[in-house]
Amino acid sequence: MVKPGSVILNTAARMLMPLQLLFSIFLLLRGHDEPGGGFIAGLVAAGAFALYLFAFGVDATRAILRAVDPRDLIGTGLLLGVLSALPAWFVGEPILTAQWWPIDALGMKLSTPLIFDIGVYLAVLGAVTAMVMTLMEVDTDEG
Image (cartoon, rainbow, N blue to C red; front, side, top):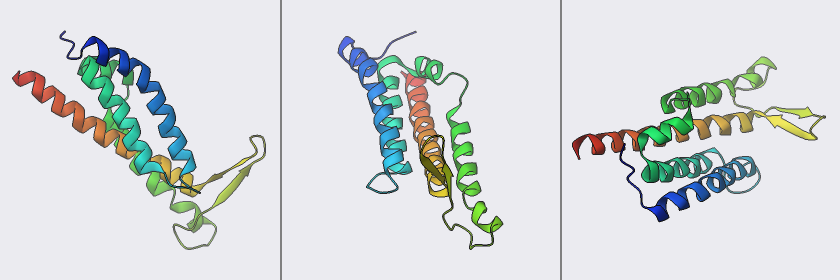
Protein backbone atom coordinates (compact mmCIF):
# COMPACT_ATOMS: atom_id res chain seq x y z
CA MET A 1 0.00 0.00 0.00
CA VAL A 2 1.36 3.39 -0.98
CA LYS A 3 1.23 6.15 1.61
CA PRO A 4 0.71 9.37 -0.32
CA GLY A 5 1.78 11.80 2.43
CA SER A 6 5.13 12.99 3.65
CA VAL A 7 6.45 12.65 7.20
CA ILE A 8 5.38 16.21 8.01
CA LEU A 9 1.87 15.68 6.58
CA ASN A 10 1.48 12.35 8.41
CA THR A 11 2.51 13.88 11.73
CA ALA A 12 0.30 16.92 11.23
CA ALA A 13 -2.68 14.74 10.31
CA ARG A 14 -2.28 12.62 13.44
CA MET A 15 -2.10 15.72 15.64
CA LEU A 16 -4.73 17.89 13.93
CA MET A 17 -7.48 15.36 13.29
CA PRO A 18 -8.58 15.01 16.94
CA LEU A 19 -8.45 18.79 17.38
CA GLN A 20 -10.54 19.37 14.28
CA LEU A 21 -13.13 16.81 15.37
CA LEU A 22 -13.33 18.38 18.83
CA PHE A 23 -13.70 21.84 17.29
CA SER A 24 -16.46 20.52 15.01
CA ILE A 25 -18.39 19.28 18.06
CA PHE A 26 -17.91 22.70 19.68
CA LEU A 27 -19.30 24.41 16.56
CA LEU A 28 -22.21 21.98 16.44
CA LEU A 29 -23.24 22.60 20.03
CA ARG A 30 -22.63 26.35 19.90
CA GLY A 31 -24.74 26.85 16.78
CA HIS A 32 -28.05 27.47 18.55
CA ASP A 33 -27.07 30.73 20.23
CA GLU A 34 -23.99 31.89 18.32
CA PRO A 35 -22.59 31.43 14.81
CA GLY A 36 -22.02 27.80 13.97
CA GLY A 37 -24.27 24.80 13.64
CA GLY A 38 -24.52 21.55 11.79
CA PHE A 39 -23.34 22.65 8.36
CA ILE A 40 -20.07 24.33 9.26
CA ALA A 41 -19.38 21.72 11.94
CA GLY A 42 -19.86 18.97 9.37
CA LEU A 43 -17.45 20.72 7.00
CA VAL A 44 -14.80 21.00 9.72
CA ALA A 45 -15.20 17.30 10.58
CA ALA A 46 -15.02 16.36 6.90
CA GLY A 47 -11.86 18.46 6.64
CA ALA A 48 -10.34 16.39 9.43
CA PHE A 49 -11.06 13.16 7.56
CA ALA A 50 -9.85 14.70 4.28
CA LEU A 51 -6.54 15.66 5.90
CA TYR A 52 -6.15 12.12 7.22
CA LEU A 53 -7.10 10.79 3.79
CA PHE A 54 -4.44 12.88 2.05
CA ALA A 55 -1.83 11.78 4.56
CA PHE A 56 -2.57 8.05 4.80
CA GLY A 57 -4.80 7.09 1.87
CA VAL A 58 -8.28 5.69 1.40
CA ASP A 59 -7.74 2.33 3.13
CA ALA A 60 -6.41 3.90 6.33
CA THR A 61 -9.30 6.37 6.39
CA ARG A 62 -11.83 3.58 5.94
CA ALA A 63 -10.15 1.77 8.84
CA ILE A 64 -10.59 4.87 11.03
CA LEU A 65 -14.26 5.09 10.06
CA ARG A 66 -14.48 1.36 10.90
CA ALA A 67 -17.82 -0.07 9.85
CA VAL A 68 -19.44 3.29 9.05
CA ASP A 69 -19.79 4.01 5.37
CA PRO A 70 -20.03 7.75 4.61
CA ARG A 71 -23.21 7.06 2.65
CA ASP A 72 -24.77 5.64 5.82
CA LEU A 73 -23.99 8.94 7.54
CA ILE A 74 -25.90 10.78 4.81
CA GLY A 75 -28.97 8.58 5.30
CA THR A 76 -28.84 8.82 9.08
CA GLY A 77 -28.49 12.60 8.89
CA LEU A 78 -31.47 12.92 6.56
CA LEU A 79 -33.52 10.67 8.82
CA LEU A 80 -32.70 12.77 11.89
CA GLY A 81 -33.57 15.94 10.00
CA VAL A 82 -36.99 14.58 9.09
CA LEU A 83 -37.62 13.16 12.56
CA SER A 84 -36.81 16.53 14.16
CA ALA A 85 -39.83 18.03 12.41
CA LEU A 86 -42.36 15.61 13.89
CA PRO A 87 -42.46 16.19 17.69
CA ALA A 88 -44.28 19.51 17.29
CA TRP A 89 -46.94 17.82 15.19
CA PHE A 90 -47.57 15.26 17.95
CA VAL A 91 -48.26 17.99 20.53
CA GLY A 92 -50.61 19.89 18.22
CA GLU A 93 -48.25 22.69 17.13
CA PRO A 94 -47.23 23.57 13.57
CA ILE A 95 -44.67 21.22 12.09
CA LEU A 96 -41.03 22.33 12.60
CA THR A 97 -41.91 24.30 15.76
CA ALA A 98 -39.00 23.89 18.17
CA GLN A 99 -39.57 21.60 21.13
CA TRP A 100 -37.42 21.57 24.28
CA TRP A 101 -37.12 18.72 26.78
CA PRO A 102 -35.21 19.31 30.02
CA ILE A 103 -32.70 16.67 31.10
CA ASP A 104 -32.36 17.34 34.80
CA ALA A 105 -29.57 14.81 35.35
CA LEU A 106 -27.29 16.72 32.95
CA GLY A 107 -28.61 20.20 33.67
CA MET A 108 -29.35 20.87 30.00
CA LYS A 109 -32.17 20.67 27.48
CA LEU A 110 -32.54 18.45 24.44
CA SER A 111 -34.24 20.18 21.55
CA THR A 112 -35.49 19.53 18.07
CA PRO A 113 -33.15 22.20 16.63
CA LEU A 114 -30.21 20.27 18.09
CA ILE A 115 -31.51 17.03 16.57
CA PHE A 116 -31.88 18.80 13.22
CA ASP A 117 -28.34 20.22 13.48
CA ILE A 118 -26.95 16.77 14.27
CA GLY A 119 -28.73 15.48 11.17
CA VAL A 120 -27.22 18.23 9.03
CA TYR A 121 -23.80 17.53 10.60
CA LEU A 122 -23.98 13.84 9.71
CA ALA A 123 -25.32 14.48 6.20
CA VAL A 124 -22.60 17.04 5.38
CA LEU A 125 -19.86 14.90 6.95
CA GLY A 126 -21.01 11.85 4.98
CA ALA A 127 -21.44 13.68 1.67
CA VAL A 128 -18.10 15.50 1.71
CA THR A 129 -16.18 12.47 2.99
CA ALA A 130 -17.76 10.21 0.37
CA MET A 131 -16.93 12.68 -2.40
CA VAL A 132 -13.32 13.11 -1.36
CA MET A 133 -12.82 9.36 -0.87
CA THR A 134 -14.31 8.64 -4.28
CA LEU A 135 -12.07 11.22 -5.92
CA MET A 136 -9.01 9.77 -4.16
CA GLU A 137 -9.95 6.23 -5.27
CA VAL A 138 -10.34 7.39 -8.88
CA ASP A 139 -7.00 9.24 -8.70
CA THR A 140 -5.12 6.26 -7.30
CA ASP A 141 -6.69 3.88 -9.83
CA GLU A 142 -5.45 6.00 -12.74
CA GLY A 143 -2.03 6.84 -11.30
